[in-house]
Length: 210
Image (cartoon, rainbow, N blue to C red; front, side, top):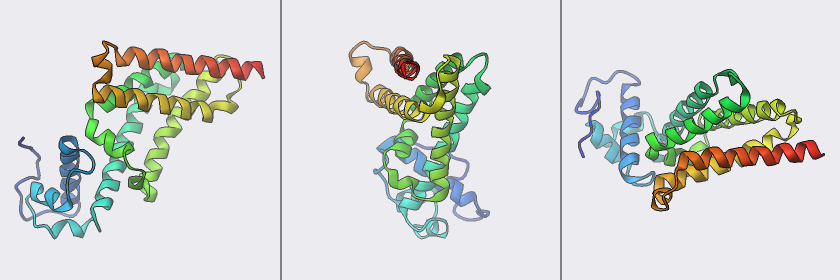
């Protein structure tokens, strides 16, 4: 498989930051092709067209490169969720459904990146990568709080609901990526929508019953 990247093939003349960007893109390509653990820092350097020592100007080791990849992945993921949420318009429930579609679409479009983001919590050990992941979860939390309020339920349980929705969404995404749903003739989008609605309905019932 031949990779095309604006920086590949350049062996010198990198401006500050351009080599870093190129290495992250190389990692993204390699992760998509081989999985999160399927490459070394020297392989990323080779793909970019620099010496094996060059990456160490920007990354202490492979883990640092994966942390930067995860950070950028979560930033893109959070932005995708925020765009789908669109400030809760026209109403929280409709916007919440759009977020489910966006969640699944991101995982399908970026399977390697998605796996790198969620496959190893060590990639989130740096303050910046951890903050990016927190931003995505905060978006789900905010949406869940808005949905509970729309149904007339207190939003005190929004954090627990967000974790449940996240866990369910991740499970659907992983099963979709592995092809299990297709093997059973099931549609991941339908499962995502109906399952998330059921989780919200149960949360509302519990909240109102208290």
